[in-house]
Image (cartoon, rainbow, N blue to C red; front, side):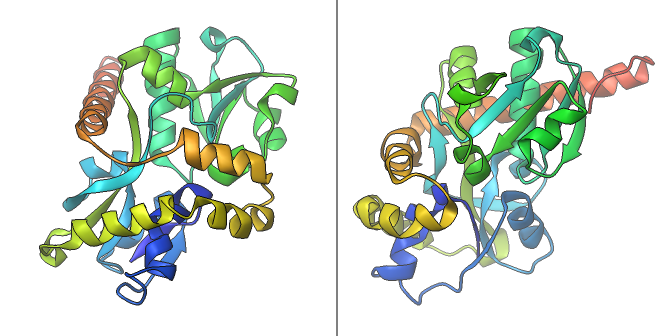
Length: 263
């Protein structure tokens, strides 16, 4: 089983590491895009799947637990040297394909721009050397203090809420269809609830080694990240996938007509 290596995933697997589900699953950790690729290759049977990958992979969603937000999340940031409506080039951390698509949707629908995407490692200053803006996610984003930067920072969770009025779901647990079995959802939800009940312990053990201040880690896990998903979250997920499909269709139409757009 593949789990995301960022702080936001730790509560989801805490029960598997320390609680009643300990030993029930064999865990490995990777960045979101790598988890999806491991599932696609059949190297693992279950994983935390970036939302955008649900369009590509034949998976069964394990409903109940995941990674979402209902507003500002703090760990999915678009940092720009220019006003958002003037962004022409966007450096993107390829660790999360969902965040890249989310940035593209927000920039297209809220700011009327479709920048060229330039994949880069998650080093903010290097990303901005050759691009107007950058998307940085996960622990690297939590190690950045947006208010101290000389550039504008958009929280993409907050931007999505303003655009749609819905929660944003970044990732869900999902299984290869031939490996799905009854009862999996309950085990994953129980592990999540165990983790949410032990946030102080998680912060004490995880924040320092990740270079994240404990106060920020505690606020992030307790107030920003939503781990238990309900009907509103799944509505938000469906809306995200629908808008992503529409944007891709518009891209294909533009290419067919000879126009130049980011893909």
